[in-house]
Amino acid sequence: MDTKIDQQVAIDEALVPHVRRLRIGRRNFRLLSDITSKESTLQLVYDVLRLTP
Image (tube, rainbow, N blue to C red; front, side, top):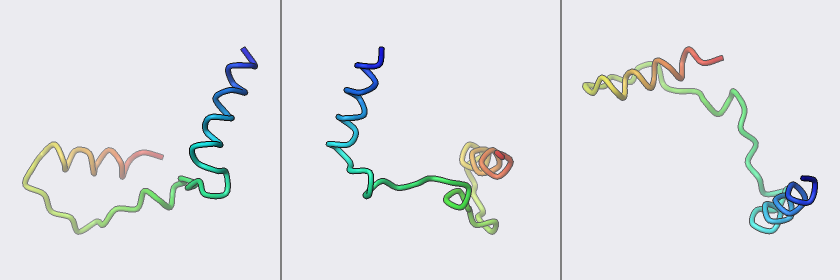
């Protein structure tokens, strides 16, 4: 099992070096609160993202 993980890490590192990776955290999920949408599906997505911890 460790060899698969090591292989995947090597592939990931070859595709995107560690120093160039984007770190995703809470600050990346900020949405404008004044967004008005006529599509209920899009509004639902905004609501779910706003409520997600």
